Image 1 (cartoon, rainbow, N blue to C red):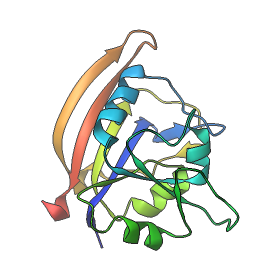
Image 2 (tube, rainbow, N blue to C red):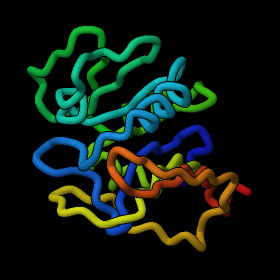
Image 3 (cartoon, one colour):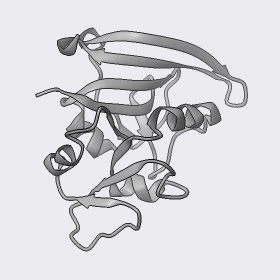
Length: 167
């Protein structure tokens, strides 16, 4: 089942790399601003390691739903759930909720998500966490903006994609 209100927001490299050693692969200040603009006012669904990797949490003006398998986990300012189904139930009445990682959470939500907000960095990186491979023929590209980051010396693009089965 595809959920129209479940969106994934992720920054990936050309080789689908998203992280290494529980950290991001690159620092793009404009992408962080882009993330904030898109997600403010919405629920964020994430795994515990993603929450713990944030420099400061909870992020302002966003509801945090943290998926964990440890019943002792508590995170001030966050709601804890123990399954994908429980997370989906928490956001069932919302217009849009965002899955923000990590790798295992992305893999579980990817077949369910109706929309992708993709930052695609046009180079490869060594990584230990990867996003599921995207069959772009199953998605409609709604918008695309291309950029060059002078500090990092690479090109990247913002793509908004909607699953064709919802179009």
